[in-house]
Image (cartoon, rainbow, N blue to C red):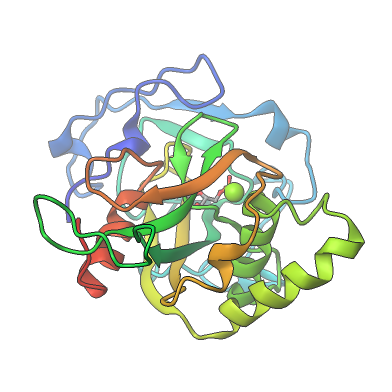
Length: 279
Ligand code: RP5
Ligand code: MG
Ligand code: MG
């Protein structure tokens, strides 16, 4: 596969740190490169030792490549290598060592719920794209508060949490503002959303995410699952309201030209192909 790109973004997110520049042909660890001098960076937020973050290596030695307590330190890519007691990013060099903004050494597991419906006209007929002549899908997108980019409303898997629960919880928090909704409205919404997320969904992707927060020693991995409201009368009727780390939320046409956070555009391409929709 192509070398990661967003994991080499010149400026590390939320900081003034500039990554050591890594050309495409030096991404792989198998390329000997004695001149490589990556910048070490741990965001102050992570250094403060919040519950979701590991301590510094040295003061603690987690069990890598296994489930360590509740924390899943296995990678979907198989066994990852270690260098001086630190895990090595399986996709190669990023120009930064340490954890940056990520809490875990090694893989940081997330889940991405891709909720879709067909784009329809006033009469309820599917709208065909003028160029591809294929029906157009829409998905629930959020605008991330951290970087302002549009994204799937995904989030981190809590220690010991089932991925199926993470998918529903993160969608509810970010796209339905479940954390701040009135108890009286909550029951109805929970019922609808549980119904949609109870269906197995279509697992679109499982593996490494090309996330701008990745470092040589910490990286994002995800399970992306598509929940499709084919008749457009279940989740499509729910009032969307941005919450938690989402600044805005709306239905967005699935289209290759719409820029999205991290590898999210790739996940949507897989959804569009599966559903024979416009891309
Ligand atoms: C991405 O970061 C994943 O694909 C997921 O969408 C997201 C999880 O991080 P937070 O939204 O919790 O910051 O790599
Ligand atoms: Mg979240
Ligand atoms: Mg999130």
